[in-house]
Image (cartoon, rainbow, N blue to C red; front, side, top):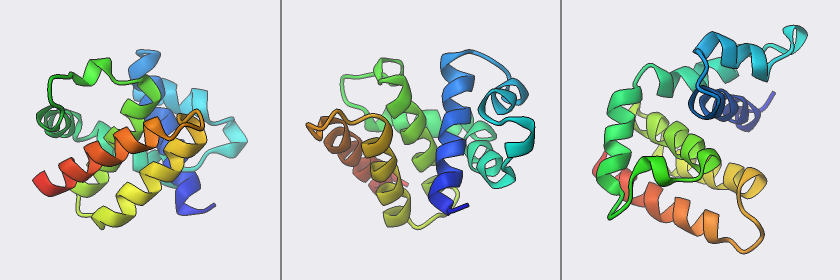
Amino acid sequence: MSRRDNRIFGMQIIYRVDFDDVSTSEAIKQVFNNDDFNEEGVEFALKYLNNREKVDQIIEMALENYSISRLNAVDRAIIRLATAEMYLGEDKRVAINEALEITKMFSDEGNHKAVAFNNSLLDKIAKEI
């Protein structure tokens, strides 16, 4: 598995915890079949889930006239994962680039609006961290 694949699994777990309002263990069960379990993907999700309050606070401070709850649920999961990575010391350019690639795969509708929004927000967050 590539690191991007692991990030995608992590984003999907974060999404399920948030959107489906389930526990972390239930989200992990939903994302993985028993034989497809990916420990590294879980570790990516835990970067956010173990630092949820601080990461959400960082995101909220970077949003202007907007709240985190108004973000598209998929974009919210992607931004949370990338912010957690940057907060915990991952190279900011890597975290942002990976988030934008995942945005292209899961959120952008071909008009690049989601990519542009996420890029702008993550750049602002990177400067604040």
